[in-house]
Image (cartoon, rainbow, N blue to C red):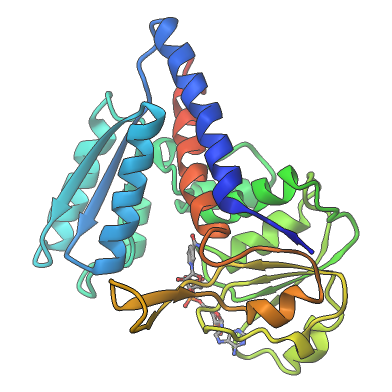
Length: 291
Ligand code: NAP
């Protein structure tokens, strides 16, 4: 079994980005600038945004964190997005999800300029991705593709089963794995909560990408020997053993599934850190595409 080590791979990629940024500086090109909007005080969201800002600083990007309180109206948030769209100094914008219930996520996503949509959620970017045209790819699926590429995982003609069809993970993941790219060219089955006989399907899978948000959902009896496992799930479960009072669990029962796997991502240290570097890669791309 080979561990698909997202922590190490993302650290390598950060060094590559850092080197590119210092080259840009030497050439007198402005360094990439990522803006993040965070609405409210959700603990997990604050952690994710904090990690993104820290990663920006590490690679030499400029970052701006815009914090808005829970009572921010939809119009106020949309105006803030428009303000960032019009700010020529900012190259990429992310709005941390989820948003408070009174704000429409789709309206916000559609308001972000597709040119600055480094999360790759705007319908224009999703459409381009489906058509295999150059676009910003959604960060988590793009990070997974990068991890598979760097470990040279063979995906051609393989049966890839994706569990979960969210707009940010499962659905784009199924599109990317089916595209005529490397990695890619898999035969993809996209499954969800209405799928019948899931175990029969996963038992046929060469690659399983699990993104449903149910801790330890995928067990050893559901996979065949030699399977490649990508565990996207991150759930905070209460723990008396950690200072924070919780620990992170993936969607895969790691110890038993690892024994049958050829490659597997750990949680934490697998897909999570790759998501952040994808965002950095997209932001760097935003600057390079204008050179
Ligand atoms: P989501 O929007 O809640 O979607 C979950 C998906 O799982 C839905 O499509 C749902 O089906 C499906 N599902 C639920 N129960 C199922 C079952 N029993 N069998 C098969 N499918 C089932 O979740 P998400 O945003 O994609 O996130 C999934 C997990 O990944 C979460 O733990 C999240 O924290 C994590 N995540 C991690 C990263 C990272 O960087 N590592 C990034 C994003 C998300 P229906 O569509 O039918 O409801």
